[in-house]
Amino acid sequence: MNDMDSPTPEESLPEGFQPLPPEDQAWQTENEPSSWGEVGSDPPADRPSAAHRRRRARRTALFPGQDERALLLNRLARRAFPSFDFFLFSFLCGAMLGAGYLLDSQSLLLLGILLVPLLTPWLGLTLASVTGSWRFFGQTLAGLLVGAGLVFIPGIVAGMAARIWLPLPLIQAHLHARLWWPDLGMLALGAVLLVLSFVRSEEKPILPGIMLAYELYLPLGAGAFGLGAGLESLWPAGALVFLAHLALAVLLGSLTLFLVRFRPVRISGYPLSLGVFLLTLTTVVVIMSDRAASFLAPAPQATPTPAQTNTLPATFTPPPTLPPTATPTHTPRPSPTSPPTATFTPTPIYARVHVVPGNGALLRSEPGSQGVVIISLLNGYLVEILPESATVDNVVWVRVYVPDLDVTGWMQLNALATATPVPSATPTP
Image (cartoon, rainbow, N blue to C red):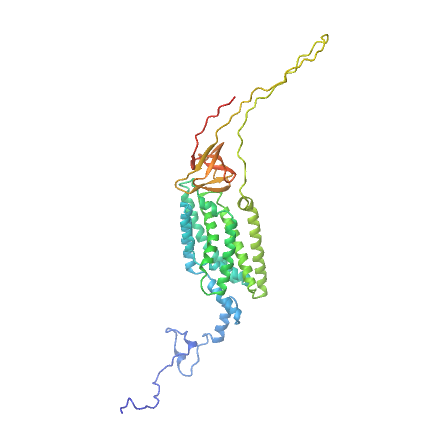
């Protein structure tokens, strides 16, 4: 048996050998002095102890405490904090939405929404509202506003570019700058599902996030596009719809967290929770009541203007007075009759909506782009052209009646393809 196979006594450590510091001392770098590593020496006074590190962690934690509830809230807060990807893809989403509104393309709008990552600032804002964390509320609110600004800026640029080609139909922009009951229903469903999925699972809830982004970013992009293009029918209508959707989403998300037993951590958090609840509820009620007449109410119905009938006034000539010496005799006299009435019966003029390139045109309450949008009509819709017309900004507008919808409004003449020729009204005896 050689020396390598034989057991050897325990070897002594060489001179100058310094053992590795324990795990809690691994923070030291190579550039720091290592004199404290000698046997029997004490660490420097400025090195934080384990107790000091624990106190610092408690101070930096959004929800202090070591119980299970505090650990859960801190884990959710870390997941809800916005990242760099959120801001980057929000800007790309805004650029895609601006192009979609400019080209009136629904496909580009959907592609822009798919680019949006999970709306983590909204989740953080909702969580902070219920748990009463003022600091976390401010951080997530700032992140949400920055993300909204990154969507808003490309929309303004796209609207300014649209001034070159105006007037344009802009059907998609007007659709998303209005309040619709189906949109409110999808917003409510998306907000509730997103909160529940976020709390109960570590995976990203993709579908509820897309539903929420659809209802928040599309109205915001439409409002930005209208501001850049100078269209009063889009701005500030789109921004008000965005605020109403955001307030409703925060309100429903907070109520959902409250129902699953999330409460303010401290007494000082209750004013924040109550204030957010009242503010969001007031915003929803005020905006929806102010815009309900033009957005949520059914389109105003009107009947077509009847053909005018010119009737000559009838005259009555009294009989001459008989002399007093004449014997009065009863002589029947013919009753006065009116002359024949001349009636104009114009032939109705029908036309179909025909916008190329495009999918249709807008029916407005007044001539001009400032008129309130009543409804959008797709290509092929049959309308009746009424006698009234007006010229606004060198664009001819005509008043039309939509028989299928029983609605009357104003449309651009160049958006219509006439189906019957314009007749010349001739009086009939």
